[in-house]
Image 1 (cartoon, rainbow, N blue to C red):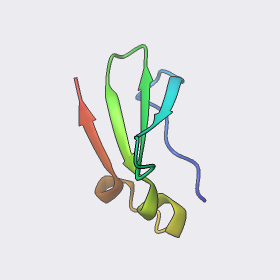
Image 2 (cartoon, one colour):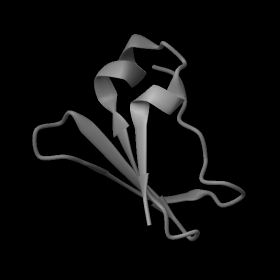
Image 3 (tube, rainbow, N blue to C red):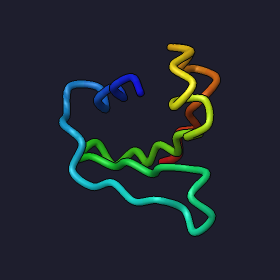
Length: 56
């Protein structure tokens, strides 16, 4: 598994898994929620753009 990136210049403050364990949510002080597709992360493709969805 490759490491996930930080939120801009802020460190990640909280992590949580979705109920079905398919996504990992991360949030930081920049108030952006990122949902990471765990299948893509675990495959180690390194294509974070395709693996993450950002919300404000």
